[in-house]
Image (cartoon, helix red, strand yellow):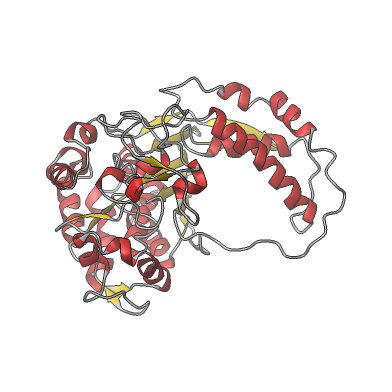
Length: 423
């Protein structure tokens, strides 16, 4: 992610990127909302400004929350689900191509036409709005329309595309032009925009007005759901109205681990925190170097290699396979895995350490004076997700299907109804 912005006051704080989105969260706090209202409004606003990173039709939202009234910690999982008609042989698997994308880097193969990445067959049930809506519905206190209104105000006033969005459009221009509704929505008079061109997100205002009036569940059960399905199926997709109507964000107990003297909580599988907690468990058994020391980087790299091996071997949707969660989070297991790393070299030469960031996914944090805390991650997946836009609504859909392994016979292979492993 690029550098975020924090807006705070005596009643709460919101951290997000870009700054305009964080200010929307602060506005909601000032209007009497709590941290959950502020986080929901901010998570609605970020996609207006950074549609390459996130979207109302983004494939997932995952969040950790603290309910100030009870002190309880909750995991909110609004990960995508594969359509019921999905199956493990639905994509044509090819040998890996040099310079490829997620299929080559994650799955060591190619998929014909990148059909699990771009287009109608890449779309699983979009989970992001369900996560936002559940966050507000369960713990918020302002009216839903009031949570949506600041994003409508953004669109009415217009805003610059930004360097990031303009660059993402330029990088994906060839893909974007395959889908007329996407080209109409993202391009400026048919051309790649500049960072300073003013944008009003054509048709997105209609979508937000409809959701403010009909409620967020219309996306899954109403007119918007039926419109999405009709257009996706006309383009060869397999998502159906039953897939959308049956989708719900899961609110459960989180995973937990201790790192040094701190209790750490993470969202449930198939989201990424189990791997983070595993890494922290291992690091708890290793020397605590400063991150300016090359040994810190070497040690972290070796830990993550072990974690990633476990991740690709054992992890997936626990509704569809037996994942040894307790074992993977066990301090004894971490100690055994870390033991092999205690003999790393005392000195690692080299001053050229890798830097940089990937312009996908965003994070929103909010807290208030009542002890409510939200830590939420929202994403389209890769830039602009599937690049498939619902015509007339300006709604770009995420590509949850590319987070499932397109190859048959794997822990994370495609199965109808399965939630994809995500990072």
